[in-house]
Amino acid sequence: MKIGIIVYSKTGNTLQAAEQIAARLTKAGEQVEIQRFTAEEESAQSSRPVRLHKTPNPNLYDVLIIGSPVKAFSLDPAITMYLQQVEFTKQVPTFCFLTQYFKKPWMGGNHTLKQLLSQLSAKGVAAQSLGIVNWSNAKREAQIDAIAEQSVNMIQGITK
Ligand SMILES: Cc1cc2nc3c(=O)[nH]c(=O)nc-3n(C[C@H](O)[C@H](O)[C@H](O)COP(=O)(O)O)c2cc1C
Image 1 (cartoon, rainbow, N blue to C red):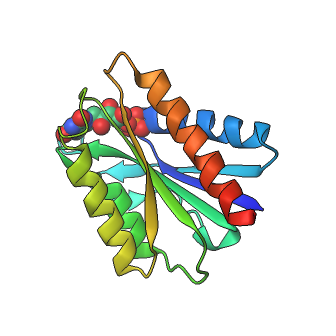
Image 2: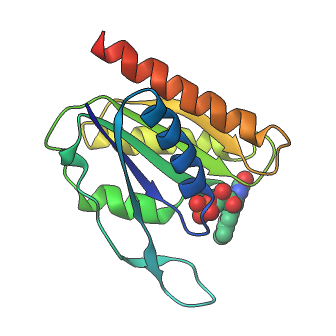
């Protein structure tokens, strides 16, 4: 099984979480590839994305994991732009996770997760959440570990 982790990460947190998830999956014997993309932004004053630097193909994998940061209590517009630009031609098990600065998921994370699941659903993708990493929470590492563990359980559950 080839697992693709597609991640938008501006300052590296979501990428770091993706790398820890990938390491856990690799340890469990899975083949994992991380595809990070970034975006060109309108100006130094406005972080509105105007162009993606890369548009990873989501159709190269047997399982997809999509990771995104929370931005202004909502889904980062770069992820929305990405989802508008790609077509999902294969139905594969798809999972997602978020990172956010604030300590609790109700501080924007839960709402953002619903947005991400709904935008994926609009593209014909029935995704499941792996969870949210609250970057300023003292339990951040445990949250990442739990997401990584859950990804192993979910993915190995599919292949059984
Ligand atoms: C413009 C901007 C808005 C943000 N808004 C929120 C927010 O509403 N809630 C939150 O918890 N974190 C917010 N954050 C923090 C990011 O979600 C958090 O640092 C995330 O882990 C960044 O991921 P990245 O390093 O992969 O880009 C914001 C960050 C930026 C730059």
